[in-house]
Image 1 (cartoon, rainbow, N blue to C red):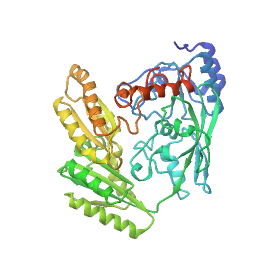
Image 2: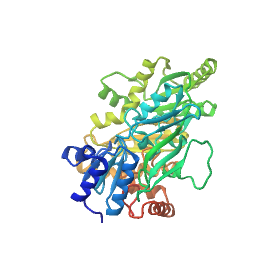
Image 3: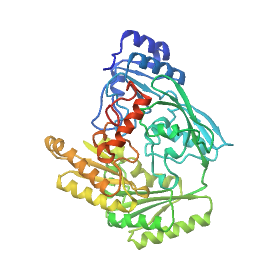
Image 4: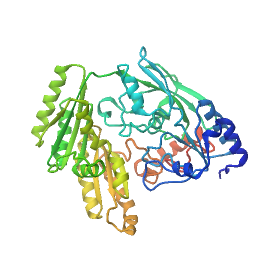
Length: 466
């Protein structure tokens, strides 16, 4: 179906990006064969690291003419296999396009190249008294371009929203090599279809993002964090519902079963939790007025105590805040390093159904003799589930894991949820897409893909098959 990389194609790629940006050695082919998704990999034929938008335009022209599959890549932190070159071909890594082009204080916008690390962009705008709220757990290692491709979320979504709420404009190279610009430094824009938001979350299947304009807000001057242990997940979940019902909208409300802290402590070699607790809430509030912050603190404290919180720990210093968050932010990294073989779910349900989903997850894991850990963004209903093989024999794991995932996805849908909230479909969830979308919706998505990419050369095999 696709053309193989020939010597003439290799020479042309070197002409476009230079010999130091084109790689065919075994070490790089292996490195770029995977992202952070456990158990999925496929080697590319070549890796190219362009430095400019014009280089990407020329590479896409070449790929379109020669019918070469291209897999765009940010920094490879994805958890759905979205950056895996399923058909070989070219991995187009944007890591060298890593400059913050402009911080516009007058319009509250920042313009950045796709390879900029999210945490570095946040630090840069905060030094100007501005704030970019989306904060994936991998913010210190993921890229802005990858965040746009996945529609990344994070813990602050409950108050501030996700990546899609901050993308104001894009520069995109289409599969045929044409460059277009969408949106811009404007707050309102209904000039035609909203192509900007169509690209956000499209997982690198419709175009290659080469520049991003992001909306900023003023940086809150005050912040407070709480770590709250509970005797049951149900009590923790009830606390979340009551906080929202009381019209308090924290910056973040995270929950973790205590087994998650076991994993984090094995990885960090630090004590991070209360051993007697069954679950923890991690809550952040921010703002600019001390009195309002104190009122929110007191009201949250009352709700937590009413629901049986064991204790309420409050952190106001940066070091104390970082320690509170360490166990939560490292969980996927910990699973990759010390958890063994596992599968991950990234489901979302209405906030008040979190406890029901966690209960069902426990029932299913106990029935199949596997270990399950649930944690996530309780404030927006996004539950991450890690399903560990543990001591289960390989044959039993391979036989059961697909049905386990189907059961949990079915439960999620029955609870009014969706099978992915922020990690994307990619390769990992492709076979389950039809559980959540009907055939008419999937056919519409396929027609959109064909309109952008009639030769199916850009990140082929992701989300669905054509």
